[in-house]
Length: 377
Ligand SMILES: *[C@@H]1O[C@H](CO)[C@@H](O)[C@H](O)[C@H]1NC(C)=O
Ligand SMILES: *[C@@H]1O[C@H](CO)[C@@H](O)[C@H](O)[C@H]1NC(C)=O
Ligand SMILES: *[C@@H]1O[C@H](CO)[C@@H](O)[C@H](O)[C@H]1NC(C)=O
Ligand SMILES: *[C@@H]1O[C@H](CO)[C@@H](O)[C@H](O)[C@H]1NC(C)=O
Ligand SMILES: *[C@@H]1O[C@H](CO)[C@@H](O)[C@H](O)[C@H]1NC(C)=O
Ligand SMILES: *[C@@H]1O[C@H](CO)[C@@H](O)[C@H](O)[C@H]1NC(C)=O
Ligand SMILES: *[C@@H]1O[C@H](CO)[C@@H](O)[C@H](O)[C@H]1NC(C)=O
Ligand SMILES: *[C@@H]1O[C@H](CO)[C@@H](O)[C@H](O)[C@H]1NC(C)=O
Ligand SMILES: *[C@@H]1O[C@H](CO)[C@@H](O)[C@H](O)[C@H]1NC(C)=O
Image: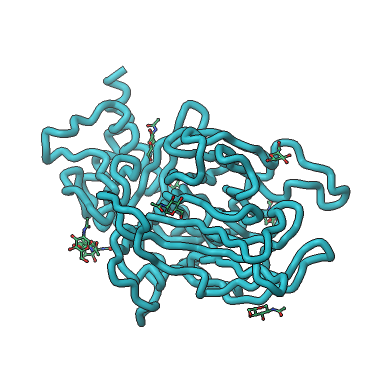
């Protein structure tokens, strides 16, 4: 009923009209005008809102540079890069890790396994990408790659999307995940020993820590729409309150409520390419090599104790990759807000003000110190 809808929206629309940015905000190529980022859902996976947005674009870096001098983007609401400055927000793991047990081999995480390179094929869409490489050395060590998002290791809820392809020798794992500890972790994993169509979605732990018995539903094998992880696919992990939704190329393939990270403890955001010769990753042949190549990383997320910006505009990140679009643009005739849009704005503004008030009342701190590199297998 339109009348009751308008009645319910009167307060938030009034609040919005006093906000810094208004409904007529123009399009925002890097999200700088946005203060709340909306993602779509599906019939059984919730839509959600986030206070922070990042887009790292590796598609057109013609002259890759070593890490520039400077500082990470910090916890600004929005940040996008399309040059070597992505380095500032991602740290390369540099750690020699001994064999975890008798059935696995040492893993050397090395920054040199992470680089932007020219595309090996010609495409109008991209001319370069980020590569994470792993290889099996003659001395039975696995050289591996991992990047950690540095502006916050206290991410709580995220929609993480990565346009990637994976290839190379069997016995490697490409990981796209959130990590708090070995028992608080949500993963997308592509195993080079698996069938081309198969991607694994897991919430750790996948086995009972005491008995070793598999935990039902903690790990699933999904068949991705392209049937081929060698091809470019958008892999997407939505960690939301009480549920994890896993997507590929715009299709939600799995929704889990098993072992979902509880939101009390913040997580790191990590991409890696590794093996340890064990039964999960598989044992790569000596001299073997496998890569995960990445055109872009897009993420909308909240941060534990994070602040919410003043005023602002709700932007939709599902319309254009890398460019959050204000949900309603009253300045143009192009978008005439339907009831969903009005409801979205109402909800967004209410949520923002409710949480501002609650942050204020609880005196939540803004941001925390970063931890030492973690110890994932
Ligand atoms: C990066 O984005 C800016 C703004 O959209 C654009 O002007 C610039 O050409 C881009 N640079 C590269 C290397 O694509
Ligand atoms: C690629 O980067 C160059 C500058 O290095 C810029 O002139 C060009 O517009 C960019 N192309 C695209 C498609 O962004
Ligand atoms: C967004 O782009 C504008 C103009 O190109 C620039 O001034 C601003 O620093 C950018 N903001 C972010 C968050 O990247
Ligand atoms: C480019 O490299 C990818 C793997 O990195 C491979 O799948 C593809 O076949 C290569 N294309 C050409 C034209 O060599
Ligand atoms: C294995 O070989 C690599 C490359 O030569 C070397 O960096 C590494 O230290 C070696 N590891 C061990 C355990 O000997
Ligand atoms: C939330 O998860 C963290 C990390 O696993 C754990 O330490 C904490 O006890 C959990 N809190 C609740 C209320 O379950
Ligand atoms: C997933 O597939 C692998 C083989 O590719 C199999 O070993 C594993 O048991 C499967 N996991 C589940 C949960 O079905
Ligand atoms: C949600 O957005 C993705 C792009 O991020 C798109 O591929 C998908 O079709 C959208 N789904 C719905 C139900 O709108
Ligand atoms: C993220 O934080 C904002 C502001 O506090 C809140 O409105 C939103 O619901 C949070 N998102 C999730 C998925 O909890």
